[in-house]
Image (cartoon, rainbow, N blue to C red):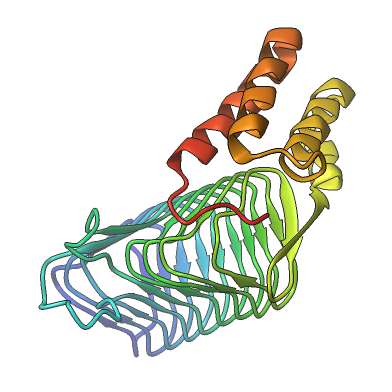
Length: 262
């Protein structure tokens, strides 16, 4: 049997795995599915349709799965999906998607989400990210794997942040941030690449050297974007170990819709 505090309110149409724990005064609505080992703290509200995976730790006062804060929303049955082993701290708000997009807000696995973080409708968050206190992701934002978003940072709707990027404290992100880059400020500026993060993730010295070269081509040589992309593509022909990183960068640049931070 799930361990449910007697003051919690669980809708009969919610589905809770046997090892789920629900704290005092939490409210779990219809259409909510929660996987094994997940704990939901006191006074949390989880509305459906929402699917939460295994071994998540959701702290008190979080609001997950509420209707999107979008004036076009008319009650359509959209969803929120949260993966496995995420930590979601106090007062976080994750909203469901809208029919103007895929209809699903997604948060992947192993993410560390600090207090007061807002994940708006249709946001797509990857795996192993860190979203620091009061980070705000507006609608339709895409965040890649291993991204770090500093506290009090606002991310404009439809913006994309590439994998391994790092956003500094109190930044205004209104353009796409390419993979591996370190950015901060208002207006946003690029201040190198995330070399320490790559070292911690086991990138070899050779791979890091080629990421550095991609940074130089984009930001230090005075090239047009098309010229920089051609130079980046050439790296993979000369350094086979860099192909996965080059493909990541070129794929991101091809998908950018708001222009990249430069």
